[in-house]
Image (tube, rainbow, N blue to C red):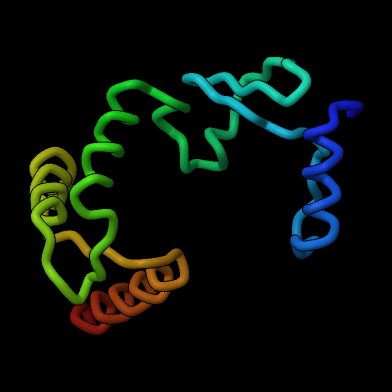
Length: 127
């Protein structure tokens, strides 16, 4: 860990980021597909998919283009309002996965809360 960028980043983490997770002192600077590179140029295989948020890989050209295209139009809209893409995604999920309707939420906590409420309702309806 001799790289200046790594040392500077580590100092910023130590000063400004709460130490809630054990952290390896590796500074990832680039990703492509399933591979990551650190500031020293070492290559790694990302077996954790960015802990499940990069399951389609890093820097895929088609995904990058789609994100850039959407970001130029509209980056985020609360679930309190409509947007053109959400019902289209729901349609694809229902047509290709399961019967019913989709529930889109804003966080993992909201998703877990909804799961508990849906389970209680289902159980109550079943007696």
